Image 1 (cartoon, rainbow over the protein chains, first blue to last red):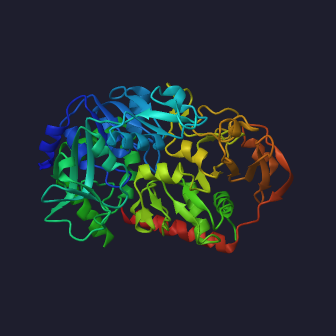
Image 2: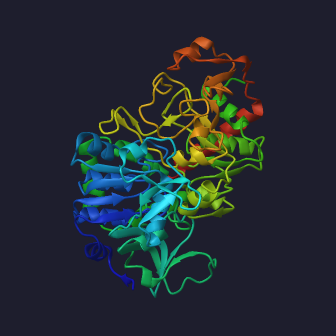
Image 3: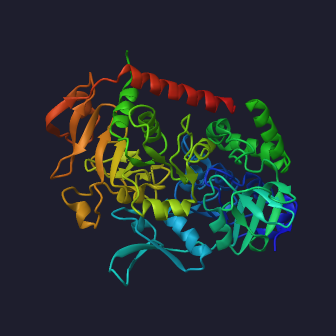
Length: 286
Length: 256
C-alpha cells in the first residue's frame, strides 16, 4: 500500500547504497527532485537504469553516486553530449563508470518483461549490428513454432523504480497522462517504488477511462513535490525548460563549474526549490 | 532567392516523403525535413516519434523526441513499449527517417563510438531506436552533412544495419524490408545501386561540383549513369522552412 512521505524520508526509506535504481520518464515527467534528494543523501554505488539518461543521470554520475549505467541513448536531447557521463566513462572522474548498452526496443521490451514477471524479453531486433558483440546480455533464442531467430535480453527487475506523476488521490492512487513512457512498467517491474507527484487531490474527477493509473497497492512511497520534474515537464502543469537543457551544456562542461553549480542549486536547496522554478516558468510564459 | 546548403538538404529530404507515408521520425534534421514535407506537399503524412506520439502535427520543431508539443498535437499517444512492439516491430511504418554520425558506402550507420568501443576517442549517444527502425521500417531515408570524418571508408561501430556488405546481404540476414533507399546530404542525393547496393550519386545539388563531393567522401564515389541536378528550392519551400525555424527559435527562446 502506498504511503505519503516527505521527499527526504521517501528517499531515505526506499533507496539504499548499492541498489539498482530505474528513474524513468521519457523526456516527460523525469523525476529530477527525487534525483536531487538522492544526491543530497549521498547514495553510493548505485546501478542506474534508464532508456535515455539525460541531465538527471549526468548530475548523479558527476556527483559520484553511480558505479554502473544501463541505457539505450545517452545524451542531452537536441543539444549534445552529457559531459559528466563522458568524463566518468572516458577519464574515470569522479569515479569510473561501467556501462551496459542496449537499443530502445530492447529496454522497452525488458521493462515490459519485468512488469510481466518473466525472466527475459524476446523481440525481433539487433539484426546485423555490433551491440551483441560488446554486451553479453544480448543473446538469441529460436522460436519453437517457426524457427525464427529472435533477440533476447534479461528482464529489467530493479530494486527501486523512481517516477514523477501528475497526481495522487487521497487514497494513494497515482495518475499519469501525456507521454507515459515506460513508467508503469518500471514501477511494476521493481521491488520498491518512489513516486513524486505535482499535487494530491481528493479524487481524480473527470478523466479518460484509459488514463494510466497505478493503484495504491502497486505503489510504495509517494511524495508531493510540485515542479518536481523540472527542467523536464509535467503535462498540463508546465512546459519543458528547453533553455535549461541548452544551458546545461555549458554548466556541465568543466568539473569546477559543475561542482559549484551543484552546491548552489542542489546541495544547498530542498525540494521546495522546484515549485519556485515552475512558477518562474509559468510567469515567463504569460 | 538565395539559400544555404543546409536548406537545400532539408528541402531535398522533405521532397522524398510521400503524402501517404507513415514515418518514424528521428530527432534533429530528420524532424525538420518530415515537418517541412507535412507543411508543403504532404499534408496528410503521418509522423510518429518514438515517445509514442502518433500522427503528431507540431507547430514548432521539438528539441527532444518527447517535447509536450508532440503530445498536444498528436492523434493519440501510446506507451513506449507499445510503440516499439506493436507499431514498429508490427511493421506499420512505410519509412524511417534517420541521421547519423558516421556512414559508410552501404549506408550502415554509427552513432555509438568513434574509436574502439571499450576505449573510445569519442563516446556518442548510442543507437536509441535506430537498430530496430533500420530493420522494421519499409525503407529508410537518411539525412547527413557530408565530411571526410563522417563519410568513412570503414565504420568504427555498426549501430544500425543498412546494406551490410552490399548485394543481397539484407536478404541473407532475413530482412524483407528495403533498408536505406535515399541518402540526402548538403551536396547530393545518393541511392543504392540496384545490384551492389552501394550508395551512388543520382542527383547533385545546384552549384555543387564533383570535386566537392569527392573531397567530402571517405570512399571513391560512384555516380549513376544519369546524374540529375537537384531542382533548386522553390520560394514556397524556403519560406515555409524559414518560418518553421523562426517559430521554433521563438518558442525555445521563450522558455528562457
